[in-house]
Length: 454
Image 1 (tube, helix red, strand yellow):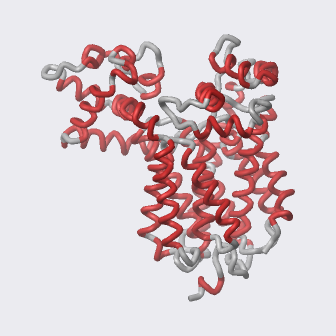
Image 2 (cartoon, rainbow, N blue to C red):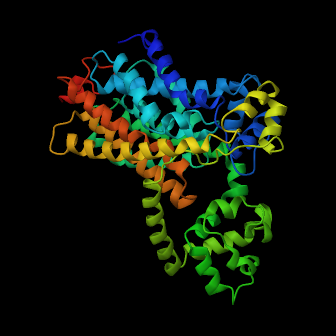
């Protein structure tokens, strides 16, 4: 078993590669949601539309407002450490640190991973949840490492309202398919899946207040974006006195505008609190009427397909003026960072133009990665542990797209947080095929040889 101390230089170097976008920007990347997370953490108040968990992390990791650089550095170290661990297992116990560092460098410049890591927001914890789940299902080391991975998994689930459903659904599927990977899994794989499922559901307890206050708005936003709400209102407003009926001709084309634009019909029909009863009645009627349910199903499939091919960076990374809410909160909670924040490329208005070439490159690399992955796997013998990694990552990409597209909206930022796993899969298969064996020689990592040969 390799000492974790031996991994540390590789993990730190990988983390440095993942911080390239923030270093280029001169400050961690932020978006309008960052203001809400800062306020929740420093005021110790749960926002109406998201859990308090990430806000508390911001306060803790920034050392109570010293610097957001410490936040993105921690995120980079976590992701780098998990990637190194997966590479270590996929290479079958061979010397892996140099390979892992190269993989992290390639992912940093050839995918959206580094941009996700450098965002002050919880999107980075979507892949963290999948990586920790994977390692827990296949890890055969000591209990100390498992406790740490369980804790990290729970935190990753609890920071975003989309994560409990996403991870619970994934774990149900893995439980049903557990016989296919039992040879390489932890001996107590059933118990592990159940524990992870319980932790996923427990995450709902942290965000129960936010879900109660906002679920109806996000679901209505999804119905608006898919065109279902407009058709329903056109058919039902003659017999129902919904306040939203007066504004059905003003419904925007996407959920984001419906939820966040001040002049949206949402704010004319009762705001977040005042619309709850009406929106719940509308959504209940839609999901219990076959005609509208079928319409929603067709639109949801189309939305999932659009989300699968939409994974660009730059959503929400516009410049923020001195008068913006975010600038005010950085000045209040991180006073020592305000000058560097305002001097960043993002706030000088030059960052968005820099996204054009990387986004084009990321799309090309994703297509090439998919083609190469097919060539390297179809009709070829792939080690069982590597096949399981591909299975989990494939589920992650697909389920993430479905979770966002069906329950929320289609957004490049949502796809970006998971699509880097596609080139990662291609690199893992290549590394595994470079060695004579795809299984490690000891029973403490993925692919215990004696288990695989049962």
